[in-house]
Image 1 (tube, one colour):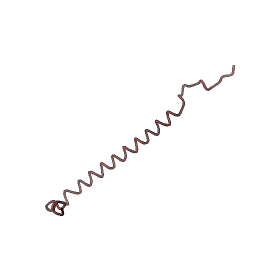
Image 2: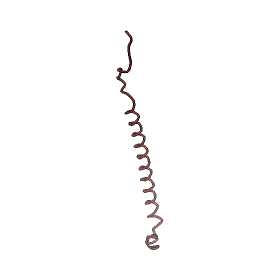
Image 3: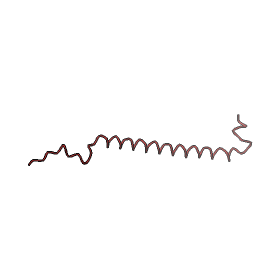
Image 4: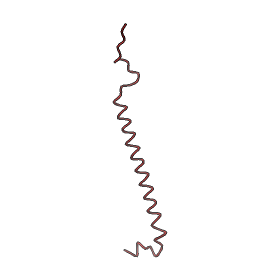
Length: 62
């Protein structure tokens, strides 16, 4: 197993790009996940509010 991880002496050139790639992918995933949660919260809040053009609840005295 150690021979595999050393990659014939080229491990210093092989493993850092893998680590960097997975770190970038993890960052992108985390940002997208946070944005999705934010959009779902906004959508939920918008569904709870009455429409802006809804004037049925306002009584006008004549």
